[in-house]
Amino acid sequence: MVCEYGSELKRMVEVARVHTENGKLADYIPALTKANPNDIAVSIFDGQSTCFSEGNYNQRFTLQSISKILTLALALIDHGEEVVFDKVGMEPTGDPFNSIVKLEAHKPSKPLNPMINAGALAVSSLILGESANEKVDRLIAFVCQLSGNDFLTYNAEVAQSEFETADLNRSLAYFMKQHGVITEDVEELLSFYTKQCAIEVSCEDLARIGYVLANKGKNEDGIEVIPADVARIVKTFMVTCGMYNASGEFAIKVGIPAKSGVAGGILCAVPNKMGIGIYGPALDEKGNSIAGMKLLELISERYELSIF
Image 1 (cartoon, helix red, strand yellow):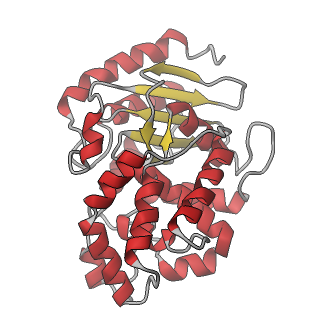
Image 2 (tube, rainbow, N blue to C red):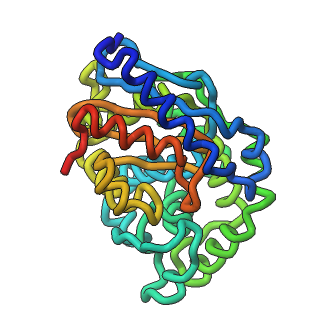
């Protein structure tokens, strides 16, 4: 066990927990309102045999937008950079994650990056598979390989809840179909997308995935799970776009490649050092875990983890 974190990490969790009262659950996805807004947890994995965890770390939650970095990695493995970045750009937007503004204003009308919803939909359309279910099976197998957990699946209730309330994402998808960014059936794409977002994980799963990304695509046994260049590209997007339109502030205050999701998860990859998984479902106004952000500030400052 990573004993050097000890009671100090537990203290930081409790310091961060008080911030949960200033956040709110993602109520626009009804199934996510069942979470306990007071939960906060962290797991740290540095390649040893055991994660070190504190807080409500046994609570499972859905990936939501954290899945965007995983589908990006799989799409890059499936097709390579040229094909993927013909469909989606590489630039931050500064807009909310579900905004359609840049799609309308930018020519050609492709999404500016894979971390906004429009970009994630474009990337998801590239995942190989004959159906939504075949695609999600491939993605789950990939996430199992990254996390070392062979028992992951998606939460059907959350997926259905998202599918039924996905009208804005449908609008984004139809806009992109009109402009040739995607070609497949929109409902089939939304079926896959909502299931990918509903894949359930724990903090430890996130920490272990983060470790692989942090260590150039290799797991703790030195086995390459993803190509080093794919891990590099993914980490770069995590820095520039991973925390929605709070990514710049997060880079200054925390300085760790990270990707958040509206179920309250945050996946972090500290290059050449460790992976960190965070859970705290009470969100700030930009869709990031409000206590999780504070906890990462404390951890990064205490252990000098900023890459800058």
